[in-house]
Length: 428
Ligand code: GDP
Ligand code: IMO
Ligand code: MG
Image (cartoon, rainbow, N blue to C red):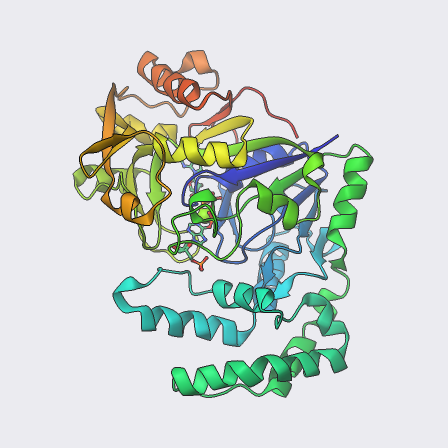
């Protein structure tokens, strides 16, 4: 038995929440492995819409155990709010949500530093979600982070905060000219989350490895996406974790030999929220149409998402980085609004045709998309439940993507609702 990974192939918001929700119907465990509440995963259940930022999407499916892995960064206030918000909507959370004791905590000074940094960068800003994600991972790597388990040893907690803030306060006051933090105040603030955290804290890696051994279905839910990966994405316009498949192991404690299916999720076009290169971005009416029809506004920050055509050069690269075994294609219905569909099949970089995703940032900034045009279908596809129900032009479009990527499609999503999908081969 092995764990299934679901991850994004572009710059996030591909519909991972929606795909995970479909898979969670058969799962026993759903685990988040990277990022924090910079994510926003939407699940529609009839007329109800749930947007989860930190808690795995599996929480919407009764009986599924959800874990927040060691690779995730946890803002305890957001955790408390998200638990209450879900419970107020009738979803039982506390009995089946586990948080890894090794996960790092996002503290108020991380959130503030995120804002100061962005402001200082000016026009070169990353366009972060301003949730303190980067500064928290920085502290983790610098070995001055505060972990969930530290909340249960007051002595260690206070000592670690004093050590962490010695340097941090000097940065906050001397570089940014802001007020310093009192380590004891932060310690008291953290201790106030003890009661919430205590029943949830677990060695979630051990839980998942045990489940895999017992042949119980485990789903690892990606957040952000491969082009935002700190190593493989459009650095420095990336997030500070590894949303790609390798991160699923490091961020959960599930060994690589226990991974089975790796499901890559892509929209039928592309969106990006935040700054950084985006070769197929559309600045015209067409971009506006995709944004309007696709309702492309950030699930976390509400920012309008930048929209453009599907970039197969980028998706082939991310499919290969992740070793995807199957593909989930979302938002096919949105392309019903366009007469002609374009797909980027190559780049022109400084007068030269390039078919491989460039490693160099400079090349990527110079990349001009080379498009293949396909006929649009112009009719509503939200009612299609079998591939053969799709109009011929839509079938040609999905077959083209499938052939180019060389992996079979497991799901074609034709709307945000649970049942609005063509599902071929799914099951954790
Ligand atoms: P995630 O971050 O990858 O989970 O994606 P988000 O939830 O941030 O954004 C995806 C958005 O598209 C959400 O509003 C979903 O309800 C919506 N959505 C997902 N799949 C489809 C689809 O096939 N068609 C349409 N029209 N909307 C979809
Ligand atoms: P989901 O899981 C889209 C982007 C931010 C910014 C960059 C760095 O919903 O797909 P950060 O706050 O992480 O330091 O910001 O990453 N970003 C996302 N964009 N979807 C997300 O999550 C994102 N999480 C981070 O907009 O460009
Ligand atoms: Mg999202």
